[in-house]
Image 1 (tube, rainbow, N blue to C red):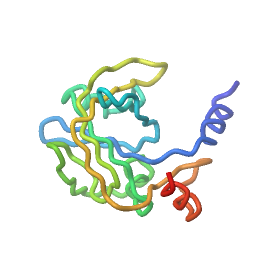
Image 2: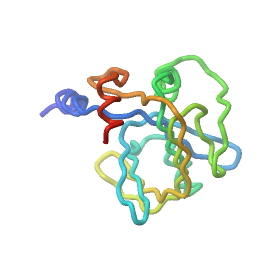
Image 3: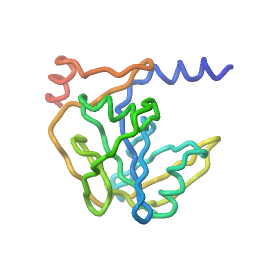
Image 4: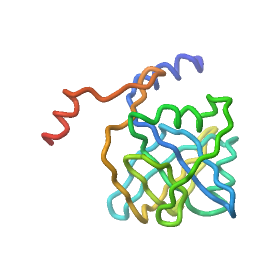
Length: 162
């Protein structure tokens, strides 16, 4: 099977959009990721997947921490910027939460300590123990079929019934 077929198949799974941030010294690095999931309630663990070539690895490993920022549906430009899809160089005013750099306006911010790390293929999987959570109002930015989408009203109504 070729890479394009695999990528297309994986794109059929709708995900939220996150920006993972980490800091070493005074330098902050971030990257857009949709490879994020919860792992455990006790202890509270989440998992992120980072390409082994990504500079973010040095920051996560150097600090032993990372933050997960779940983006709201008005943050497409922020997602594109941290995905390297924008040539514009911009200054990001990070919002500090639990000692971690986070993205202003994110609907969820998770401050995590690295709990474990595993190599899987060409990625590093980081399991983070959540040390603090910040929730904000808003609808999530979602990604499906290689494009951003908004949550429809019918989906929102159903999720509020749960």
